[in-house]
Length: 377
Image (tube, rainbow, N blue to C red; front, side):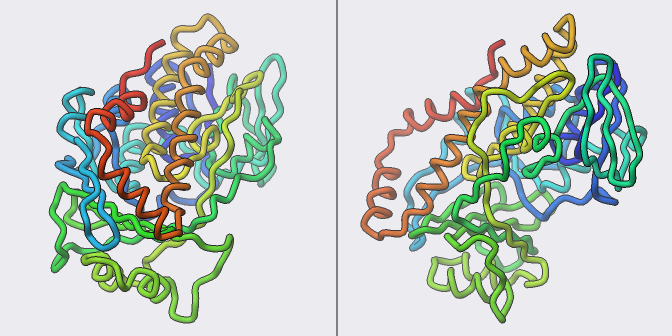
């Protein structure tokens, strides 16, 4: 079969690799004129590492030794049991730059079959094939279409017709910088919680540091006169070090700002010869650190379902049975995490922090098991 894939982000490229591994011809259509990911760091959990291994994709990454959850004043609230998690699930947890992960997937897929500057506007599905129309009027046909074209997926818009994504009430700023003079240990990440805000930072494999700050903001708000950097310094200036130093040492022109969105879970990703994958299927807030991992799991499951099922309808049914409930659970968990971060009342935020401090280690491990354990068919 010939598969058409909309989008060359992490999910689309992973789908391309997975479908080729199962013997299908694949063509990926990417609206941008170059492969360029935003400057974001990712924490890849064991489920994501397993998916990359199944795809045969190696990445330049830094093994995670520990992750500490702290208050904005620096008080320790929780330590994630990284060593125990890795042992229980048979894979390391790693830090990786999103662009490095995308590049590794692109190298594995290759340039043959990757079409840049190809913006899919609509598709037509009939009993014999699926046809896509690009912005320039070009047509392409195949046996199936995978919509992996992100949060505002054109494929999803036509397939499900469920409108725009949901604004979550928060904005995320992101940046990277050299590590010199910053008091942060390689392999150790820190996530600080404040009142209605959070900040996190960790090393990447190339001795740079990635950080992200989240605060409650109106949708679409623009930077102030001093730019994103000044806005951030005003919001985080009283936080414990190295938070203010990380912001101050970052080139203001390289700071990215995006509003945060997700979508309510749906019961179906597929119809006819078309299915969805990654953010097009289940966009989620970054609070669970699972967006990329879930997209990678989607790709592996879709490829394996096409290999095992007798026909396309059966393959899509198997794919959804393996992935839909699991991914939707992570969407809900991520949204709950976002709501927890958004607590602005100091008393309620203190209760939240206190509960985190008292949470037994074994309870946290069991909570993570549902997401990180290898899925059952």
